[in-house]
Image 1 (cartoon, rainbow, N blue to C red):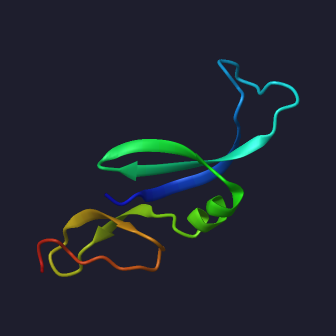
Image 2 (cartoon, rainbow, N blue to C red):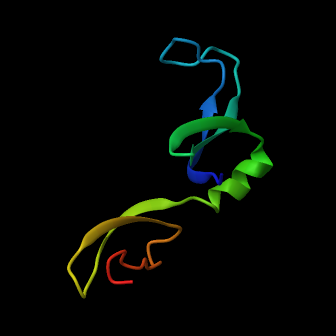
Amino acid sequence: MTKLTISVCKVFKNTGNLRSHRKKTKKHWKHYFIEDGKFKTEWVNPIKAQFLKTQKRKLLNFICIDCGLIFQGIVKKDSDSYECPECE
């Protein structure tokens, strides 16, 4: 299945159960995504993290002008449009 990227961010890898990070630790990149309807995470290298940042998706609410139906769709940009599931 495809991975829908939600976020890519820098986090401390060695935090343990503490709220703050341990001393002398470095930040690493973490990839948050949805795969097979489940939320998952993975560690990625800095080069792949920069690529994944360009692949982020958003869950937006859309309103159909013809029938007035409110529905959700996953799009890459705010300017992207989504077809109404009932008007097709």
